[in-house]
Image 1 (cartoon, helix red, strand yellow):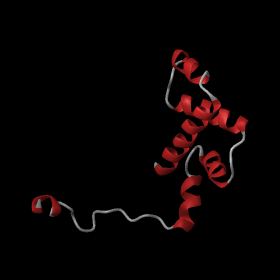
Image 2 (cartoon, rainbow, N blue to C red; image 1 turned 180 degrees about the vertical axis):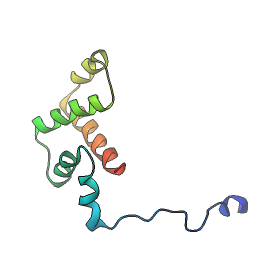
Image 3 (cartoon, rainbow, N blue to C red; image 1 turned 90 degrees about the vertical axis):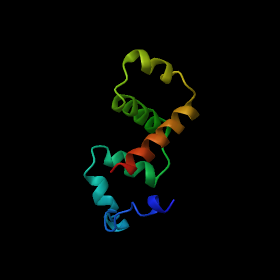
Length: 92
């Protein structure tokens, strides 16, 4: 076990940006306004559906794969969109 504990290289860990720079970090992303809006306020049904379509585009799904997803219940779509937003905000 001691071998694995010594693998960590001091100073190799990237520093996290301060929270005040969070907005500027989002500003450099393509879907920044959508992500920021979704974090700051609850999404309407039309916004969820719009982000759902964008999510499917980002996943490069063809129409055959999109069709069954479009038939899912709205609550499932909303959960998928929330996971998509959460993942997108972590990759920034």
